[in-house]
Length: 128
Image (cartoon, rainbow, N blue to C red; front, side, top):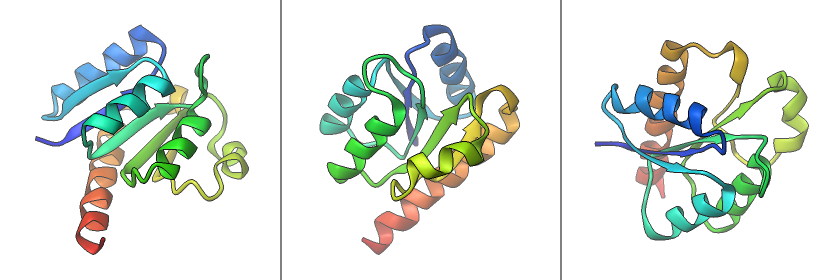
């Protein structure tokens, strides 16, 4: 079973994402902060991550940057309240699989993006 890390400080939204992923065959771990996500990644492996951009303790971009510095090369989906093109300059060099506008995402689209991110991670693991 493929494992997805959800990094989201809004408990309700994290629960919705978790429910969606679990009902589609994924094993899920929820991190309520960037710090929690880094701790989980230090002790477990994941096939992809869904990371919220706006979190209080450590924002999503800082979290992803730290993930990359620590060698975690999984497919990452960044959820943002902004238009994705407005976030591009903030995420340059972070190797983010997809930037998704939170308000416009539909379940089927998110599932397809997660599937692609998992496939990307599998392909990268074979090459590395």
